[in-house]
Length: 327
Image 1 (cartoon, rainbow, N blue to C red):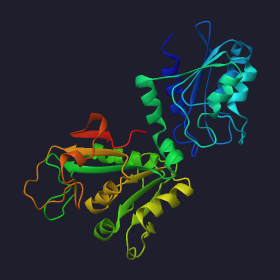
Image 2: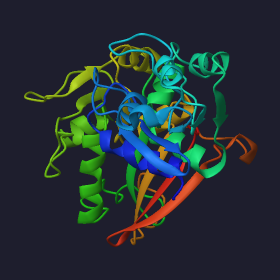
Image 3: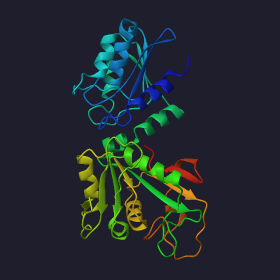
Image 4: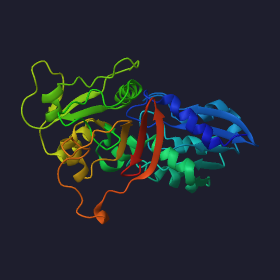
């Protein structure tokens, strides 16, 4: 039998794009070395992953181990508390890949299980990290009441976003641009700065990727939007605007702005993740725009340290993904 938590992570992905604002969750029930029930969360108001897996297992859940990607909830919402359902089903042991930082859960699920005599184990290592990444936007929103911010940029090998004239069409290749549209489709909101709006008047829509819905399309900055623009203008302070977005259950924000907006977000410590499409091109010189404008670190001790760096090939480009803040 393969690792049940690995299988639970796979099951959780089946709910990707349909569970908002809830996290994606998968669960597997194992008894005597055999998988007797599986489930995942499909949509808000529907059964949670644990309930679906327990229902599939039926009476075979008694004495079994439940593997789940996220801490079971212990409060009554649109569905019953999963921790209570686990206890009532007679499950003896629960192995969870990650805790749930949502204030109404946040350890209460584990406490309820332990109080009822259910053994609780929280995973560590690679599976635990993958589980946290799987719900990185939800976790940041639950802890900090703001969206998880991913800064996406296409740059040359020497770190330039455009030529010295400002020409940026196209830095990256067609395959990379398709991935960007997939990222938009997976995000709650996409944003640029007013400099980008004035220069390009972008649509910021997710096109040709079968998007089930379009993200909210935002512009940070002062002034007025061009006639006919469908973007929303956010002209307040960054922290205030991100807080408002969090209140509106915007959990993931894809930042596509130029170096001015990106630099402001980085200095304010609001960038959580970087996704950089590196093209096999070199611009040269010192008059082409770089990733982050504005004052930077005065010394290397103050430099932003990245973690969990991953590199993959996308057409002729390289996609470098790294975390500023681990989820």
